[in-house]
Image 1: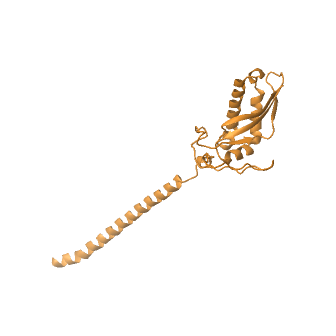
Image 2: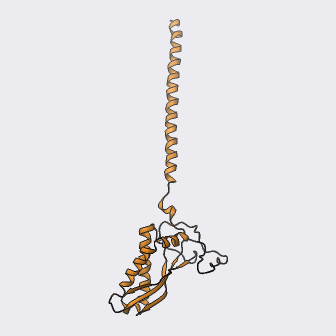
Amino acid sequence: MAKDNVEGAPKKKGKFKKLLLIGVAAVALIGAGAGAGIYFGALSAHEAKPEDNYPKLVVRSKEDPEPAAEGEDKEAPPKVGTVSVPNDKYKVDPKKYEITYYPIADSFTTNLADGSGFLQVGISLSTFYDGKVINNIKRQAVPIRSAVLMVLAEQDPGLLSTSQGKQRLQRQLTASINDVLRDKEGFGGIDNVYFTSLVIQ
């Protein structure tokens, strides 16, 4: 009988080793799976989102403003923003952020809605966002020009002779230009439209 126990002992050790190896392999596979899940989860968390490419707000500097570009053909370097926003409808505090004005080179001329005359307007756009908005405006100059002309063509000359009518036109132009930029670039960013000239005849 003692002989049987001695012979059975090595068999139990062999089974134990097999079970131990299977257990270690299972733990290693589970660990590898968890590690891969964490790795790929981290990759997907860092995937580029559209918001990553949105223009950023430019914080107002306490130092002297940058000098303007000299000469007619030269432009000031584009501003660099540092504050990300979730969308272009974010309410901006004008005391905290710097504004940039971008004049549209050519004026706009169109017939008025009632056919009584024409309207000629020069405009400048303002934004609290960085140079990406200015680049978007330049890239989308043709559809912006078309949208502005359509808004101008719908105007009533009687309303435009009042300050309320001009302010309404400013709001319409701002909304129209932002719509074009949102459609073409995914982000508006225009705060207001200012008149540099306005002639009704």
